[in-house]
Length: 306
View 1 (cartoon, rainbow, N blue to C red):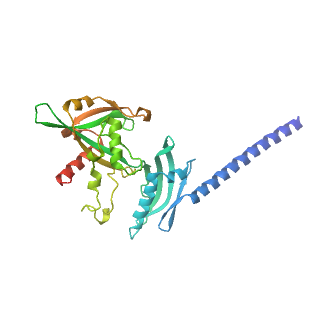
View 2: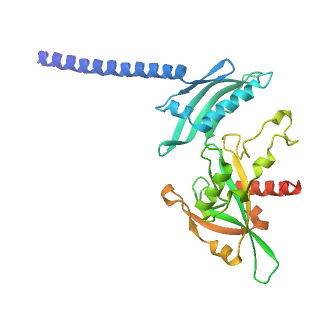
């Protein structure tokens, strides 16, 4: 009995010791991997090295190749170096989560550990990164037969937006940029996919390019750089909008046929219904892209830029 008890106790202790040692081994391995991660991944602001870390099983190397993240680190470095007195000190960037679209990164959430040099207080640094998008104010001009009265309608898309949440949210056609820098080409592609309407690139005008040109008087020394677009939520996201406009002449009958048309790329999870609204009533919808495009369109017209 004692022999069996001794054997059982020894066996239990041995198994426990093995498991503990194995666990400790994994802890040390993870610790070393984490420490290696701290030293391996970084970006520079001048001669200062900013570590990029994570506490999760995230492929940080792929995040570094994500075009919006590359642009963010490059722009941040330029912003920090162009000021004589550093108001902020960046200590660390922690990658917290990554969402993929198939094999490609779609969204990245990370936190910047930054403090105000004067007070030592933390600066807001939680960022949801998704990169830029393009949106199109598509105005259809038509008139009744034997009538000189021209009516202007704006093409809308209705689709589920669970963040709002809404199952039929009204928006102007829009889509995420692919990193190619071809904003106009992407805009015409989105119009085709979301509404079925074909437009020539030559008929599209990038209103943000007209508004944020480097030679504009509004770009004083504090704003002296070319913005990538309009930023709907700069307090927590890098997303910028390239706002385009296209004015297309169409027959009244063809315009009316668009109402209720089903579009979108079904294999990409899009389920879109096309709608119309008179241009004079566009300000009534809750889509910030539409409101921004409308305001920009009116301002550019007043300044004879469009």
